[in-house]
Each structure stands twice: as C-alpha cells, then as structure tokens.
Amino acid sequence: MVSEQGVVREEVEEEWQRLKQNMSKIKHKIAIMSGKGGVGKSTVTVNLAMAFAMQGYVDRVGILDADFHGPSIPKMLSLKGYGFQVLGPGVIIPAIGPLGIKVVSMDFLLPSDETPVIWRGPLKMRAIKQFLADITWGARLPPHRSPARDGRRALERRPTHTRHGRHDHSDHTV
Image 1 (cartoon, rainbow, N blue to C red):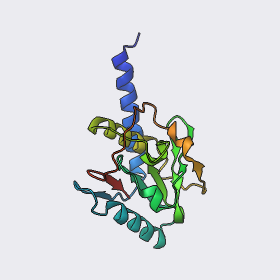
Image 2 (cartoon, rainbow, N blue to C red; image 1 turned 90 degrees about the vertical axis):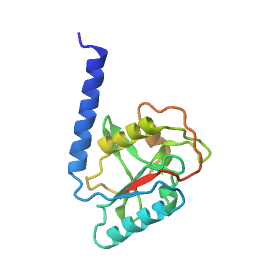
Image 3 (cartoon, rainbow, N blue to C red; image 1 turned 90 degrees about the horizontal axis):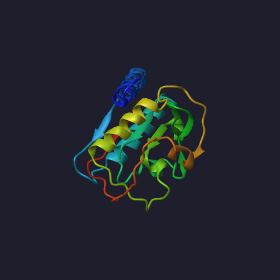
Image 4 (cartoon, helix red, strand yellow; image 1 turned 60 degrees about the vertical axis):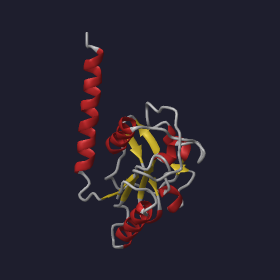
C-alpha cells in the first residue's frame, strides 16, 4: 500500500518534470518584475510581446500574467472574457491574442473583475508552477478564443479569491 505522502511526492515530482519539459521547449524567457506597483510592468510586457510578434515571431510569443491582484494583460490585448482551453489533465491551451500571442492570466479564472484574490506566496507559487507545467506553451496552435469559464476548471485546488486591485509585487513572463 502506498502512503499518502508517497502519492503526494509522486505528484509533485511529475509536475516538476512537466514544468522542466515545458520550459526546455521555450528558448528565450524574459521576466518583467518590480517590487513596486504602478510602474508599467504590464505595459512593458505587452509592448515587448507585440514587438517580438511584429518582428517575425508570430505565434511564438507567450505571456504569463502572474499579477494575481489586478491582472490587466487580457484587457490590454482585448482578451477580456476569454480564457484558456482545457483538453485534458495537464493539457491546457492558452488564449490566443493579437499576432498569435499566447496568454495565460489569473483573470481567466475569475468570474468577474470584482472577484477578490487573497493569496500568499505559497499559493501564488503553486499556481505559477501549475501554469508553467500544464500550459502547452511551445506548440504552434490554431487560433482560438474560448470563453473564460473553460479556464476556471484548469486549476485543481482553487481557494476563495480576493482581489485588491493593486499591482504590487506582480510579475509577468514574456
């Protein structure tokens, strides 16, 4: 009989392997970070993504909007109301924005802008790890725009959310 700890350890190891495998398929990774809110991280992120896509990297650019307290990337890319598509366990397709930019955002998991998100470090890190492990980032995908409700089922253990509307301590990956 396998212990509960053994099963959890196996699940963590499998997720870690998926994360490493997914990230190994992405040649260049850029993190836009700041410990202060309101400094333009989202604007820089969207501008860089659009610039790369316009320079010939169409369908090869992705954004992970890790701003859990005020995700704005979907709004900036006209993806508000859209989300990712869940094809099966560990197979999540990001939303596709202008010029084929792949987008994953906490915004896609929230029922409305008024839904608050109160998560501390460990829960945020768990969600980011799951995004990186389960999102099919590197594949060339056909354009699609799925309703946001599809993405809400993507994260398995989703606690009650609280959104502050602040942009402090947020990160984005282009």
